[in-house]
Image (cartoon, rainbow, N blue to C red; front, side, top):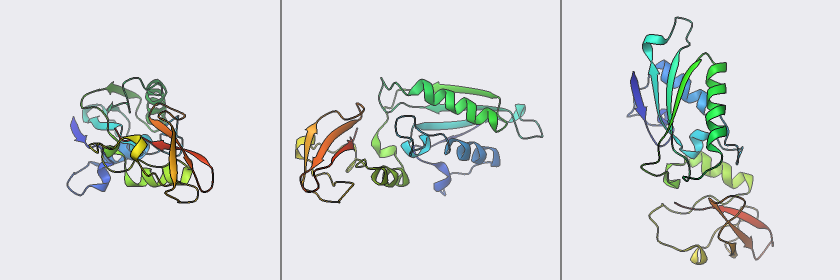
Length: 185
């Protein structure tokens, strides 16, 4: 088995050499949507930690075994069972009937692992992407979050929790629209 570990899409990194099979699996995983934010793939979110291909079980037809390691955005994320199921379905439909999925909690997921494309997709969807890096010590009350609707920075925190626990609810003081902010962690 060969391993590719990265907290973003490894195809975007020139320092990682991927086999054709690994590239195929990463491309398939890029099509697996997050059930809570369907415009993002699980690769955009950075929750796919590694891909291992069992080269001995891959028949000439291109199917076989894959081991996928994922990390939830937070330890109580209710979407992880659905994500695992969707990974199995996507890989099975693409010639990988033998899929093992491992969930690891350490190191904990961080918004630093999100791709830049994923952050742009959030903004286009109407969710303000995380600001800065996860080691920023700013409190939500002090953040000046750009409104994804009108791009004003004249916003205020409404609630520390938005539509999911990983988001906070803000409101724009200019256009008056409420919006989710994907919290750094």
